[in-house]
Amino acid sequence: MTIWWLAAIIIGAVWACIGFIWQVMKLNRIETANNKQGFDQLTDGASKDVEHIFNEEFREELRNRGRLHFEKIIGENAMFLQQDLRLTTSQLNDYMKQELSSKLHEEFAKYEESITDAKQLAIESIEKTKQTIEEERVKLSDQLQTEVENEKTRLINRFEENMADIVNHYVLAAIGKQIDLSDQLEYILSELEANKQAISEDIKHGA
Amino acid sequence: MALDNLKLPIQLISQGDVGRVRRELKDLDDFICQANLRQPGTPLKTLPKTSRGLSDFAAINKINLLNEGDRESATASLNDLIVRAPVVHISFAVDPSAAFMAKIAIWFRDKIDPLTLINVGLEPNIAAGCTLQTDNHYHDFSLRQHFYDQHQLLMTMIKGEAAR
Image (tube, rainbow over all chains, first blue to last red; front, side, top):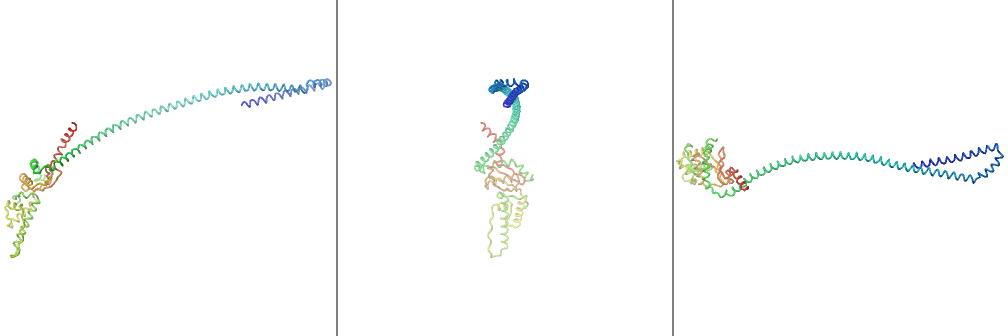
């Protein structure tokens, strides 16, 4: 951007210089032509003086002055242009900074809001999950407790039954061979006597 | 001889005993028949041995074993007895002695039926007492059954001992 501006200014300055020289030469030609008609003689004399005054050195001096002036103008303009350019660049930077900053703030705000929403959603989901897990845990715990109680009762009952069987078996095995059959006669006869009626009915009637 | 008038000696306790006596009686009958048919001069077969059961059976029922009619009558009675006599099966933990079984048989024949036949079995796991089985019922008078009946008492005592 700066280079294009500078080039345009330079081209403008060159055109102005060319125009100025062209005007000077034109005026010079007109003046020469006018003097040519009326005052040819004076012209010749004057032209000698003019040639003497506006000689090649003088014109070179004018050109140098014009060139210097032109360079000065160009320099000043370039300086102004540079200042404007710097100012514009600075303003542009500030503008860009502000825009970017505001956009970033907006985006960050949106992003933060989204994160907050997602966080809230996640927290609610976690809470629900925790609640469900807790309910399941309580249910499972109750179920497990019931199962354990049932199993415990079953094992105790089984143990008691087995225990009774073991004790019975042990006692029977321990004393079975120690009791003489003749010693049991009284017991057997008393049992038979106690069940005499049933045995008699059973044998006689088959009931 | 009618079955109602028949008396059984104490030696005849089981169906096996009755069957054995019946077999002895048949052997004796065969011997006497052969002896009657024997030609003079031919050797006589040895007299078959008779058990005390047969002797007592003949004695208490007033049977003359040399009389063919009595023998036939006795055989018929024994056949009838095997078929019609009430039979019980009694089991003990150990093999009972003859004297023991005689007392048992006396009780049955006094209290239940005079012609009761008792088959004896062995059931070691009952420890003591006996089991009685008729055609229709099973009576358990064993110590094992007594323990089973007292199962709750045993458990109460075990629990009480464990709690103490």
